[in-house]
Length: 214
Image 1 (tube, one colour):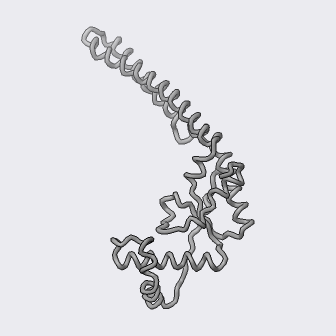
Image 2 (image 1 turned 180 degrees about the horizontal axis):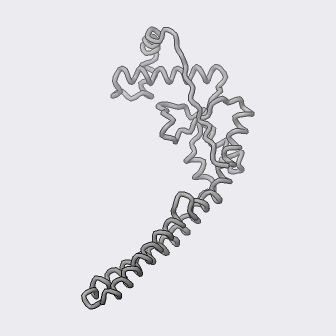
Image 3 (image 1 turned 180 degrees about the vertical axis):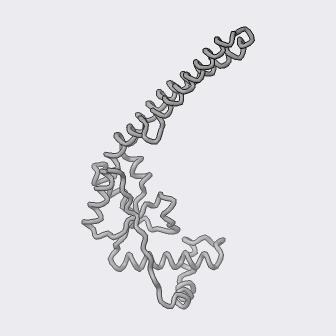
């Protein structure tokens, strides 16, 4: 089973947004000056303030959402580090094999260029066929190891998929037991998180459920 991101998107509609925003901005701007950088434009500060206000109100009304840091979680799982090291080692070994065959093809071509004036037409054809054959061998070997469905891909799936499944099941279990309806990965570029309280980060809970207590 591939890793299933559970990063759902939801939208909140706020009635009378302009009047509410003005009130929030005037009432809270001083207290939030330490959180929202002063170099932000008024509009950006206003947007940040609204996001913070929404976050706080949701937290107070039952906290049905949480954050995780997938990069942090993975970096604290020894099996993931070992799997990556295995992948690096096998990748380097296979790359060396491909480069060796490719260098053989280059050597054949270089020798052909240097000796072409001394070869008969039949010998030239034979040499050319040998070069093409060796280049094809290098290309096929590269595809075998590094193609979309190649050996490296299969190795990565075999090593990482069980770890990803365990993480997913741990997150799903926590979400079910604590009633979270939305869990975002703060390390994901697509999450679009501007501000988040550390109090809603459940990364250590996930690690604890996996047996890696923090």
